Structures are given as structure tokens and as C-alpha cells.
Picture 1: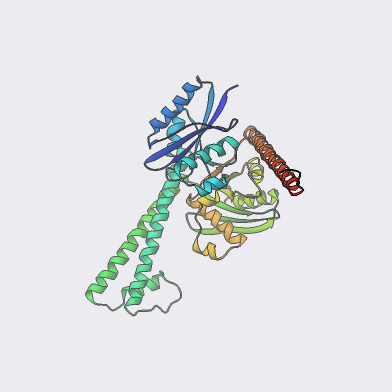
Picture 2 (picture 1 turned 30 degrees about the vertical axis):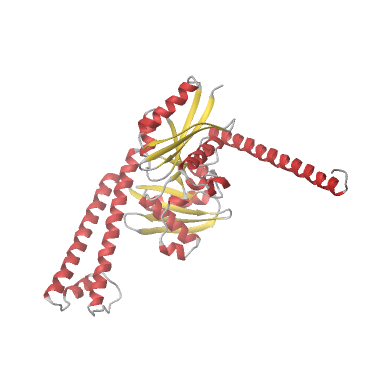
Length: 385
């Protein structure tokens, strides 16, 4: 039977701290800190293999963070079994909370790998990454457009002009801005802002057309805020920013399927629908029920999601579903890896072992307390000097 070692990696831009841990014996086999070079990680692993005469299985892992998927892809390309761990799903010991350093963080990651007390981040394929990066670029330009519009509004207000209409950025509003009486330098300043806004609008429209060329089909993101007794769903078009449909109903998978089928019929099946919900009380059960029915579903790691200021202020199921849908559309999230049945069985078995270890620790503590109580009692009675 092969030994199994878990290699926790605390990774940063300039340094890697590695810890090899045997989950069965509880032994720290090896530790090392070095420059952030994949070749040195491979050398560390090869040294471990030679120590065990290659009769060892090694699993590496690191927390989702600044390095993204790059280290994962570099290691898997070299045949290393690697996992990216979702930080919020990991157990953290009291000691690790008190003593924070790279060595302790690497050991904690290794212990989580060994015990199975984590959820993995799903690593998308190259095409998904390319589309996601392109969509992120579009959202960056939209933020820039919003900033320029705010600067135009602030500039106009500073100089004593107030628009009496209801809606801004309409044809009427733009005509009003262009007809304002200003000095030559003020008009030139305002025109530069307007030119920048129009340039950004043109770019965003060109990007949107390019996305349509690449994807062809419409893409809807269905955010699901799920609870034990109710589901709130929101279908969101990330390209137009439109909320296509919303619904709240009992926690029944059949109703989710009905919601999705209604969307498909509205688009005459020329639509791609991606569903997602936050990791929580339902675990993998809803994911497995939906994927078994052919639905593209993702479990999102909550800490990797962006949350709008409005969503922080107004917390309800509808807003939560919309926020999940927006994160799905923008790609500003990391997915929780869903293990297969064999992985789940092994993980549950390892958890059972750790539960028995905790129980053993508790019984030992009770024995010590029992003995101590009776020693004190006998001393009080004068039986022990």
C-alpha cells in the first residue's frame, strides 16, 4: 500500500512555502521555503518521491489567490496532482489563527488536503478563460464610461447648471449640455469629456458585437438564492444588463427546470443558460439534480464574488439572486469543485476517522479530569499527603 502525502503550498508573488504532511501518522515529513519558481516545486516533490522510493502518492494544493490558475496549470502540465482550495471552506486551527506565518499556513493547507475538509475551485478550460477575460475587459470599460459620465455631471454642476429633465444621457440631455453658454476654455474642457465618453461608447459597442460574433447564441445567467424551503431565481443578460425574468417558489428542482424551459421557449432554444448558486446548506445535492437533467450549473465560492454597495445595504432573496446572476455573467467568481462519488466516499470516511480522533481526545480529557478530581478529593479527606 502506497503512502499518501499532502503538500500544502502557501504561495506569493515572490516566494513559496511548502509543507509535506502525512495525514495518517500526523507527521510533518518535509518543509521548505524558496523563490516562486515551479521548477523548485517539482524538485521538492521529486525529493519526496526518492525518499519513499517512488512508492508514494503526492497531492499538492494552494489557496485561491493572486496566482490564479497559473501555478495549477504549470504543475498539472508536469504531471503533478494539484488542487486549488476555496479559502472559506477550509478548517483553521486555533493555533493557526493566533500564529500567522507562511510555514503555519502551508501546514494548515496540507492538513486540510489530508482530511478532505475543503472544497476545490473549479479550473475552467482555455476557451472559458478567454471569454471571461474579454467580458472583464468590457466591464472595466463600462466602469470607465460611468466615471467619465460622473465627471461630466460634476463639471456642469460646479459651474451652476442644473438639468430640469427627468432622465440623463438622452438626446435631449446631450443637446442641453452642448448648448450651455460657457467660456472658451470651459467649453473645450467639457468637449474633451464628451469626446472621451463617445469614444468609450463606441468601444463598448464594438466589444459587444465581437462577443456576439464569438458566442453567436444569447447567454443568460440564472442566479439562484437557495434555502431549505424556497428558491429565488433571476435570469440576467450580462451583455445588455437586462433582468429577463425573476421568480420565487418552493424548493423543488422541477420548478427550476420549468423556469429554464420557459426561458428557452422565449428564445426559441437559441440561448445558452448557465445557472449558479452559492455554496451553502444544500451542498452538492441541487447541483447533481440539475446536471443530471442536462442543466449547466455551477456552485460559486461566496468569498470570491463581487457584492455591489446596493446589495450590501438591501439584503433579500431577490437581490441575492440578482447578485449571483451578475457574478456569473461577469465571470467575477471562482467555482467550487464538485467531487465524484468515489472522492465523496473517501472524504466522508476520512472525516469519520477525524471524528473518532476527536472523540478519543475527549475521552482522554475526561479520564484526566476524573483522576484529578479524585486525587483532590482524597487530599481533602487526608488520605493522600
